[in-house]
Amino acid sequence: MEDKPRSKVRYFGMTRNQLTVLVVFGLIILGLLGGMAWVISSAGFSNLFPVLPAQNDPPTFVPLPSYTLRSTSTPPEPTSTATPVSYESLIPEGWIQFKVGKAEMWMPATFVKEAPGEDLLAAVEKSTLKKDIQTKITLWKESAPGKDLDTYVEENLKDLPDYSMFLDTTILEKRKFQVEPFEGKRVKVEYIAMGVPVEFAYYILKDGNTFWLITCGTYLSEFPEWLPIFDKVVRTFRVLP
Image (cartoon, rainbow, N blue to C red; front, top):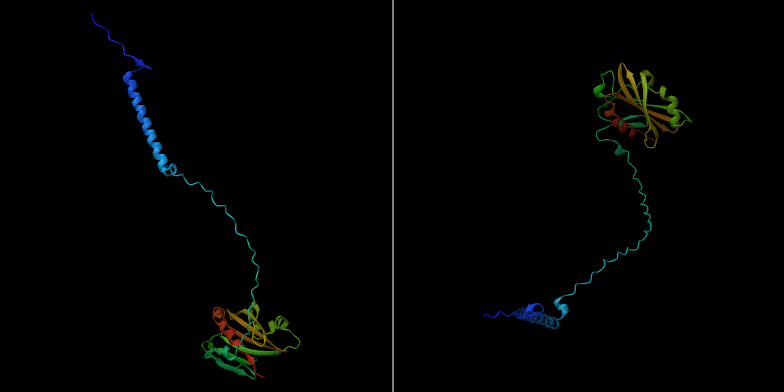
């Protein structure tokens, strides 16, 4: 008769062999943990796991103190004394002198004298001598005691030379025009002469009780080119003592 196999003895549900293996593994784990503890204690915990630097708060912005700038006044510039302009510097190079009595003025060399008629002086640009409308400059004077410049211009404009000779008269401008030492005014007038538009500039200069009148005229289409020249001519006008 065969013997029945013995049933294996179990501890906590495990066989002896299984329990032995578990104990061995436990001892190994304890050995590892003990070794790690020794390493940590000898090397120092802080060296093994360096402490992260503490997070610093961002610096607090402290505004700079504000200062109110004192207003500093700019020192006044030294007053410059204007250098007097010499009479000779007013005369363009190549111009020629036109004189009557003590009065004189200078014009481009293309101007020639002609019979003055009722004027004191008359000069015509050579290239227009044979034309119906001439580029012309005349000088005339009148005594008017007690009148200022504005009053004289307003009361006597229609009686000035050549004014009443033309039709369709249009006053274009009245403005001050300084000619040392005189107080002056320039009046621009447009006319129709023989069916042709012309333009004149009347320069009225006050010399005490005497008013000097310089009249400059030409074709309307050419007047803008001539006006700067007319202005220069009048600025050369003077009365010698």
